[in-house]
Image (cartoon, rainbow, N blue to C red; front, side, top):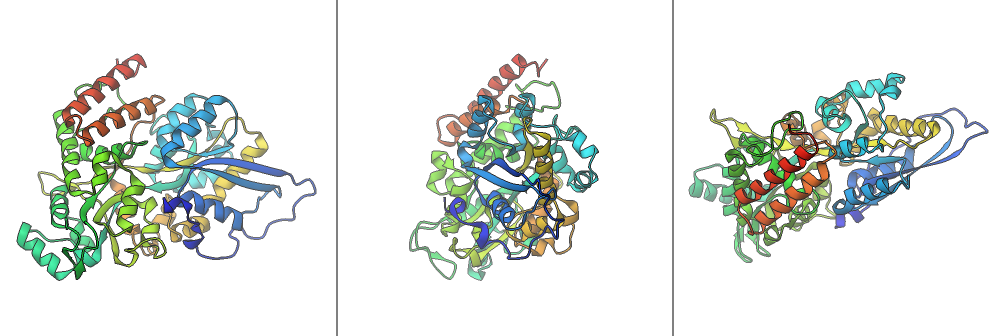
Length: 474
């Protein structure tokens, strides 16, 4: 994908060193290399480039950060293989929050409480973190006060849409005539978009090559909507979970001992998953193959082939970059659609994204100190602000609450507003087999091999058996 091969320098703002003037390096300065495993995308590319530009160790040591950029599709497998091999290759890891249980229980991730307790600067970072991130990205067990990481990049889902189409008077008039609904152009109009209207948007903007589209014609077959329908890693689950939560269903709850059977495949969950699947017909054909991951969704939109997408904030930087995107000047952003509740309001629950970064357990005291200094540098307000202005996001309340935050990027308002609707998937050590089976069955439903009910029945039976054997269901 073009996203992961492009320098983040195109997004960053040039500036002086953020670390300030430092004391002269001692004569005994050491060369210390910190190897970090990380997914290959804008937020981690920016971190490497900003570190190389501006970081100076406060100890006077010559500290070098070397990030091993790993494609998302194989990220978990590569990190897991390294940790299980005992090679002790990485001193730090940008980890998905769901991995915490697996790798904490495996003895790989360093518990940070004693270091936080001894360091007022780290205490200040913890106090400043958004509480959702503190519970999902930093703690294990889930929502405990045992801390292992700090947010390298917080993320959630937003809508990107073609304002040249949604604000076109003719398209708006035709949509109103066909569906007796408003084709959303303005942010407040998108605030009232439920999945039913999103489906109508999908129907409405399906055009063949040469059909009238906005003030011109479609240069290729054109599609109304797109969201994650990808078998690799967690791509389908991250979108489908939101449908299930919004409809009053649930995934298995790791904070209880209730069974998976009857919960994972409840009537509400089946209906919600079927709803998720039903919108596939209004998406580009790749959706039917189960290969529409977050980067495919992003790329189809940037090529000008889709009217509106739901995707992670983390992939939106390139969408507004004219060097990468055909629709950079035609795009605006809003919160994702939601499910209409009986009182007329919308439920917008979605699966929180983003990754904390952690230290590994085999580091020397000296490396731990340098690693924690990198954490404090990254979590400092000047670096966080620069990161946001370069296309990233912050999880610090002091930064998020800045009145100017929403102006630093066109998708920031949606990112901020959507934080009140975030939940997370499991953090337990059995996370990966749970996810793998779920992705497998979801893919069978996406590709038409099984029904929504058959898929969730299989997932529920698998999870119930696995979790009973693990002693998590009594």
